[in-house]
Image (cartoon, rainbow, N blue to C red; front, side):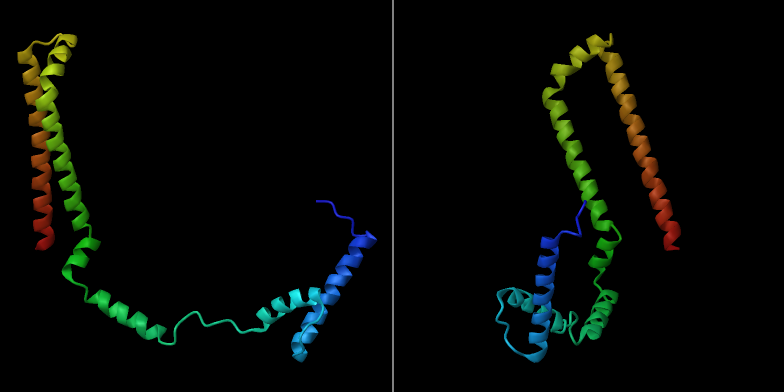
Length: 160
C-alpha cells in the first residue's frame, strides 16, 4: 500500500490524534476528567491499560489440580476401561452385529429376487451358487475363529 507521508493534511490529523492521546494520558495520571471528546475516547484506552490485569487462576489453583490428580489416580474401573478402549470395542462389536443382522434380514426378504438373476448373469446354476456361498461363509468363519484364538492366546500371555 502506498502512502504519502508528506501530505500536510495527514500530518495535521496525526498531530491532533497524538495530542489527544497525550492529554488523555496526562489527565489519567493527574486524576482529572477529560473534557475533549477526542481525548475522552483515548482516556478509556488509557484507563484500561493502567488497570491491573485480573488474575486468571484462582487462589487455590494448585490444590484443585492436586485433588483432580488424586481423583484420576483413584478413578473407578469403568473409567479406566473406557480410557483403554474397552467400551469403544464393545460398542463397535454391537454395531457390527446389528449391521450383520440387518444384512441377513435384507437377504432373507429380498434374496430370492436378486439371487436368480445374479446366477443367470454369472452363468451359474443354483448348486454352484450355494457352494460358493458356503465356501465364502466357511472362509469368513475360519478367519473369525483364528482371530478369536489369537486374541485369547495374547490375553493369556499378558495375564501371566
